[in-house]
Amino acid sequence: MQLQENYTKPPSGWVGFLIGVAIFGISVLIAIWISYSLYDFDHKKAWPLFIAFPLGF
Image 1 (tube, rainbow, N blue to C red):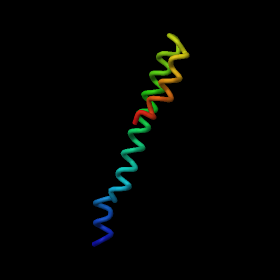
Image 2: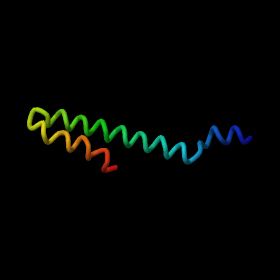
Image 3: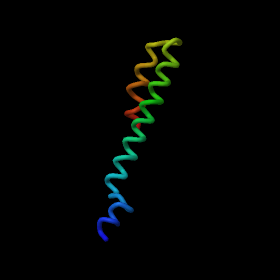
């Protein structure tokens, strides 16, 4: 029964890790998108956003 419970209810630490990785990945993708969208406008403004946006989470 314990094996079935482990499969139906994953450990909270593992779920938190997956959520953290998902949020970090999405934030990096958004930062890259902002960086590329601002690259033609002013490439010097893109890199601070690229570095600061993921660190904001």
